[in-house]
Length: 111
Length: 114
Image 1 (spheres, rainbow over the protein chains, first blue to last red):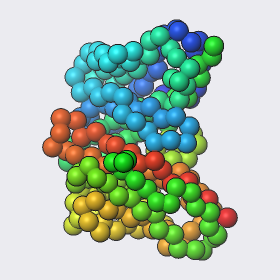
Image 2 (image 1 turned 45 degrees about the horizontal axis):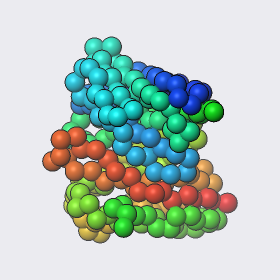
Image 3 (image 1 turned 90 degrees about the vertical axis):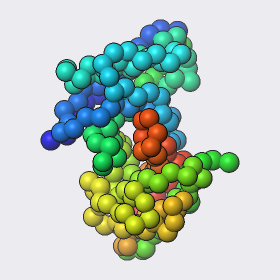
């Protein structure tokens, strides 16, 4: 079966660091995406990992361990505008082009 | 101008009515997708299309149909709308020839079925 798990909600303080975890069990794996989605808006692409390790992009970093079926998104120097949902999605196969999404983690940043 | 557009942005309709949601893109991508999003359930794939002649069912296609009129246009129809189809609907596009086949989403259509 296909299963992607993320925490439903998280709260953090402005200026702090937060880590959002994602674990997955899927029948195929060709990469993992993270998207940011503000309430009522479209998901926007944040990062993609296909090899093990850390990918850094400004304040955001994403880590992947394929052997453990695990990824995390790390947000540094949190800002109020980072309050949003963060979606983890597994790319199962380039032939199907399908993404399997987790239910998303809603992050609230407090002053 | 936005690369992926959806019309209408909001729609309220009644049970049993036929509804069409439209998606257009200027990204030149061959692949297009329709998702619905419900609170607590994440994004679920309804239909996807790899080109004008290729249409595929996603995980929740019952009660929906699609039409790929051109590379740039992909429409989703609800033949006879029911209240549990009330949701936020997103169209997305991707280009598999790129390094990541990243999907880019339209702004969404909020559909309410009374």
